[in-house]
Image (tube, rainbow, N blue to C red; front, side, top):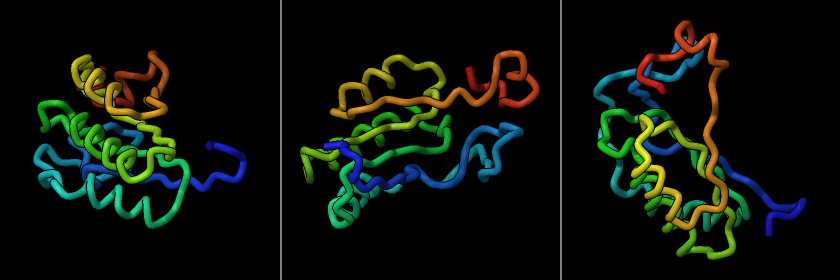
Length: 135
């Protein structure tokens, strides 16, 4: 488990379009991105099981258009991964969920192994580089 020879995969969930417009980021931006694929959690779990990796990192764009910021979609994906392989290690590298602690709790109780979040820039550069909706 998690040893030196564990294969790792990184997967971006919830599409390629972010609802924020941070100046340092080069992903697509829209206030109305495509709806979530309801089969993505299952399809992700099936693909990862086929790959035989021992560690998976789930990440995503910000999805401020979703009530929970996508936390439920992350959680469903984690549960699907663990159902297919109870020994897999799952890290979630998440958006900030607009500071919604209910969304954080939802994901934290999903069975994940590592809960991570990027701090994109130092505080003194926040206003210049980051979308003001990021808290």
